[in-house]
Amino acid sequence: MDKIRRASHAGSWYTDNPRKLAEELDGWIRAAGLAKSSDVRGVIAPHAGYSYSGRAAAYAFGNIDPTNITRVFLLGPSHHYYTTKCELSIATVYKTPIGDLPIDLEVIEELKATGKFELMDLRVDEAEHSMEMHLPYLSKVFEGHPVKIVPILVGALSAESEAMYGKLLAKYVDDPNNFFSVSSDFCHWGSRASFNYMHYEKKYGAIYKSIEALDKMGMDIIETGDADAFKQYLLEYDNTICGRHPISVFLHMLRHSSTKIKLKFLRYEQSSQCKTLRDSSVSYASAAAKVEA
Picture 1 (cartoon, rainbow, N blue to C red):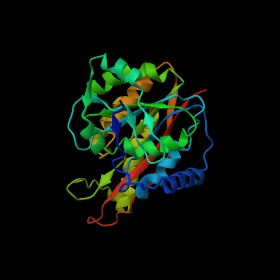
Picture 2 (picture 1 turned 30 degrees about the horizontal axis):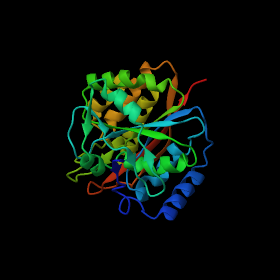
Picture 3 (picture 1 turned 90 degrees about the vertical axis):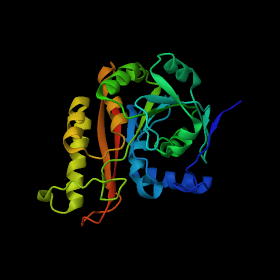
């Protein structure tokens, strides 16, 4: 008997009309104009409503060549539920309006057996949007290619835990049939209670240019693959990158795998351009993780 995680944000964060959704995703992927590459083994992509970040996300998902990939690990932050661990879904299938994605129960059992993962309640799973916002893109890209998913909710991990989970998951990077979809938005800027972050360096000019400089500094560090330098950057600037923990775990995974993989950012956008202290914005960045020749 299947345990279903509903597409709980369809109809609000993105359209629940299958034809319209497929057309939108196709359009964004076409507009990004990227060549698909079997060397791309992972992405970092945003998770806002598609009217905000759908276009930017295409610059991540548009790189994927689905031919050899049979399994996708999803790493997403927890927005509403506090945990200091990584948690696994108890669902057997994730629904999307354009096709369902079965969960790889074998790998879930393997991860459970390590004793390092907790199980997340289905209600927690359905309330969280960070992984769901990647699902329609994955469903579209893997159309006609059977693929299973391994969703991992990444909690508020300590630096030690990030390294531990990274080491534990690194072996999966060495299997070329595995792909990794890491979910994160970048700077959440503004005085509103949920952001409460107003770092501004006047030397960059307008506020939105200061935000971009701050984000790009973080993106450059992520591209070096140095998880410790990324941690240092976050301690220093406290940039509100909501997927900081999934990104850090992924950096540790890449560090400990024997396959040499390099991250490169291909797109950066902001939901709006902040010019006054009353304004607010969220930044979206898309990256591809590619095997180095």
